[in-house]
Image 1 (tube, rainbow, N blue to C red):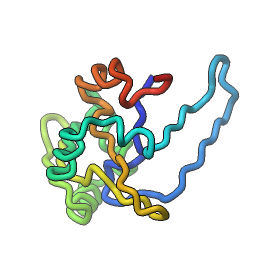
Image 2: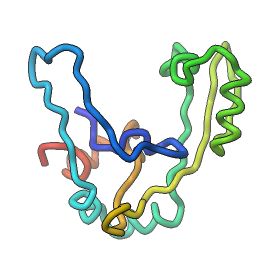
Image 3: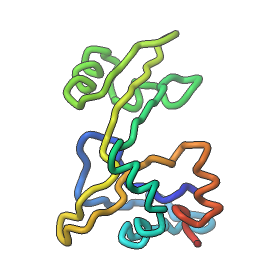
Image 4: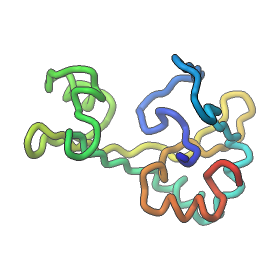
Length: 146
């Protein structure tokens, strides 16, 4: 199971609403766990929250058929100039590497202000693919069922 995360929080802008859709019913399970950032945020140790507040989150992603999804699929284009323009507009550094691969680097905020309540909430993918994520799940900080 994936740890809880905010969909598209790694982006420079994001939707205010998400909709879930299933084209076919799941054979088993099928539920999408949802968590409240109001309940998650206080469970993150204070020193960790403060560090994220100060530094944000740095995302480094490598795109390529042998690494992750191909950049053409993620950016929905085969035109490098379109990808470069998007990266420049979104404040994302990029580097074309190897055999048709791409590396992007961006720094994003880690916390956000809830648009209605004004509360500070966790708003990141910081641990989504990190090796340390398993430890957080074991501690019951960011995974469902805990």
